[in-house]
Length: 316
Image 1 (cartoon, one colour):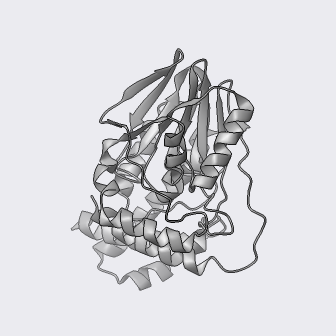
Image 2 (cartoon, rainbow, N blue to C red):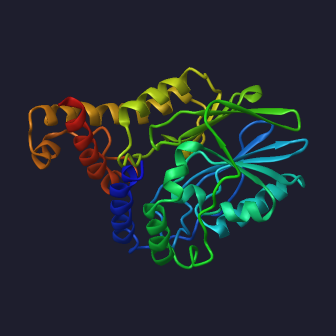
């Protein structure tokens, strides 16, 4: 499981450094947008993490109940987490009782320590256990302390959850029920979706990237497609993706991620079966359907190469 992440971490570090120079825009503010009667979310940039954007590149959500607040993901730095807590306080005086982690990628978890300081209980799927204690996770944090300074520094920690779950689990707070649904291994081994059934809201984590190219890394794209099919069956009215704007057209927006993964598998699978060199195969593919999307230049070649390697193993 640990080796699953090594190539992803190394390439992401290179990409982050190569895209950190250039015109800098004012950083996006952490602003809560209402999703339903009880649910809210904040939206990060469609970008790679840099000091300029403070690693605010992912989404997070929260659900307000009569007994407290359940947060979904903790954002990409302690400062962002503090700003999220401030936004929650503007919505409700109730305390944060739980944080549910959809997966252990840096842009979703480096804010966890701020919620632990406030007494919140942190929940994640057990598939993350090996990664948290791995050299890969430690080296990623060391690199982030350099690449994302001052937002990530020596005081930033990897936080181990208080509760591991192994299967579908109901979390009830103040009479409000949330369904915690493991859907990995897909984007990561520990992918976890959060459903608010009473209001038709789905927090999909990084299984859904809306309006941009996903980072596939060394994900199991076949399982990722199957996981998206599972999420579609939930028939959610509103989907909060891991990255990108809120979706009220769940099928259409999930289909973008699903179609992109299927396209990678089709094209790179054909190349792998024919033992065509990757560079030749990549140059031959017509990418026009996707090349207009944000982060295509940053992510697509890496996604294609990792899919090529995956398909080599799966077709032989």
